[in-house]
Image 1 (cartoon, rainbow, N blue to C red):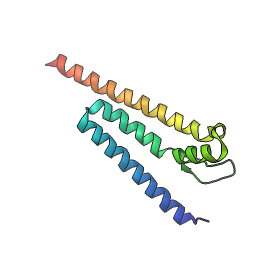
Image 2: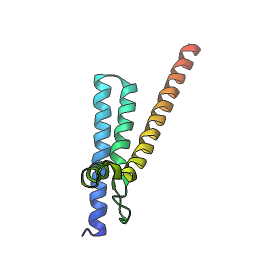
Image 3: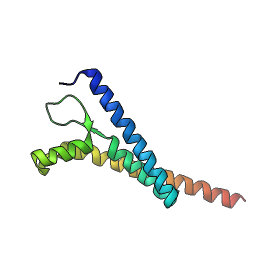
Length: 117
């Protein structure tokens, strides 16, 4: 069984790796496409990789929702994964809403600068 310290270390390593992956993916998309898709991809990747979920009803520790979704889907059946899908869906919706707000705000600032000049 995991000790509290090993659980926290493992979760911290996973969160740092997820954050580095989403930043790296956004950076790669920005270099190959443009900034707006990079914002969307970066926020969606962060939501997908960093969202926590409980692995089961009796478990008191968190695990990454994507990992819970995949393992519960294969071991318990895909109809039993709603406890991991709900937080993942909410996080993806929040990430999309944040991306839309960021892009809308940058577009409004750009439009205002052009009209002021």
